Length: 329
Image (cartoon, rainbow, N blue to C red):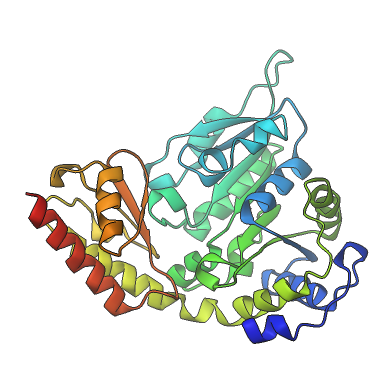
């Protein structure tokens, strides 16, 4: 990737003249079976751009209560977009149509109207859980019948595709828009993509500019993105296997609560309360021992396997946690 970035052919993407960015966008659209794609600096900007393109101020956006778009994007849909999230609690983060239907506002002039439905696949804070494609398609069809558009936060959609053994074009074809990350599991240093219709991509281009995402010689980033898009998906099964090893090992540490059967992709979330720790204390001590994670809440910790983590690293992390818990008891 670094060699490709150093040798990238570049132009001015604000004038649509960066050939490497153009190739990346064309390739992303081709892979997803869409008319067009747009390169954005981050998944958060990609999601916000799509929300702004789909809604107008005063509307509501239905999403799952642990979703990234609701919890980890600085309330941007409200602060910037003027729309209100309407969260739904769903087991493992996977919503069903009956839950969604109950959250759609009635057509009463004194009520904020539902403007958009957002799904997340894989679901980050639900431990990398995956929407079955049949379920996702059914939700999209029912939403469209109800007059709603559907956006997919597919930051890790290639992880979901790997788990299901399916292609991303078929999995996502019913969604009105998709955002996916070139970073995370695919390994690029920067960048995400929006895919959709040509008119939608052009609308998003204007919004991206408004949000400060109009970049000039961005081909140096797109070059890495092209490699991530072509080569990254093929190795994601390794991350999934490593996550399973991590969860299995942690499940055998006294006081650590995790269900390995729930681990579908590359995210492991576990409870440290019975080991006598808060998540912050647990992670602070663990960092001193050379292992890092992030807190989910006061009791739960999240770890992610990726291309810079191998099987030895995972096994060493489990052993470090085992020794730390034992020494604290």
